[in-house]
Length: 430
Image 1 (spheres, rainbow, N blue to C red):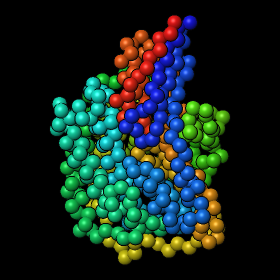
Image 2: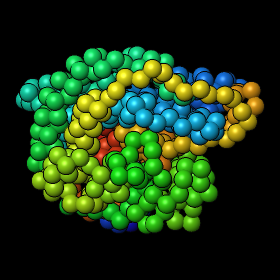
Image 3: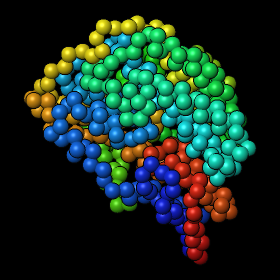
Image 4: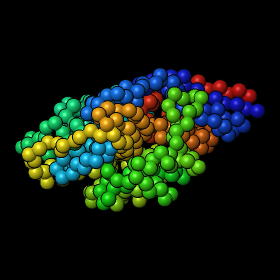
């Protein structure tokens, strides 16, 4: 029996701590594990006995890359529990701050973390030596997203201006005008990015995923919509626990999520695009068509194009919101505590994020549950490795390592954001 083991003990430059192990026997991959060994962070426990008003600031600190999604998920769940509806200009401003996060997060991933895989560089620093103009474009585009978050959130990382019921302060229209000028340039850069990524050399592979994402009512989803899947699921956030479950696996401190009685699923850009492509802005739809995406993209390596399309959409949507914005007198609506349970699902850049909170009558949090995108996608990432690596086992060690790293990076998991610099151990036992 010929055994080949691909093993990476520590993933470098990652959001968290993890490792990779793929075992093949007689030319077939038998197992693939994305090992997450980072200690538990206990955010759900931190939230217990805290006032519901504190949840946005606490959850924003779960992630420095996508704090808006965590913060807004908590806000929406609290509002769901307390019977509060935030609409009109306040809802539009929430979409605007989401635009900022998608622009900055996707841009970071596309240019700095993922593109070097396709262009043959160890990392973004090496890539910058030959493609300084591309890297500068990325920095400018990311800056445009950061500026939106800074204005609406009070600062670029871990925003402090968001609250249950709205915002602590809303901007004047004149404060939004400089953003619009920057976003017009950013839109051009985003369109150029779609065209640039479309020219990459992609492996000719596909998987039959069950895509799961929010489905917006005529709009591309950020934080509103029902949870839908490509195989007929159509539920509210309150029904999430009836259809999804998390299980513990020996090799990971992160729970693995599955659809009950069905198995792994995929959330993130590919899922959002498959379920909502018709709701993209006309420019984004045209760019996607020119890039050859079709209405569904099932090749995870081409997810870099979908992310670029979502950046383009976010620029378009941000410009629309700024153009239509009318100043309002009150930055938030009245919120009164009560005993209730609230649910919310929003779309972080990496995929759907689920929050559930149970409140006591005094407004203190009795229980909290948070299911991040990486937990939901981890089983599908491992299935990708298992499915695709079998066809690559004839590759030399370095090429095989590269493909396995790309396979992980396709989904931009928070615990594996820089596998370029890894050392790879190959065991070619016979």
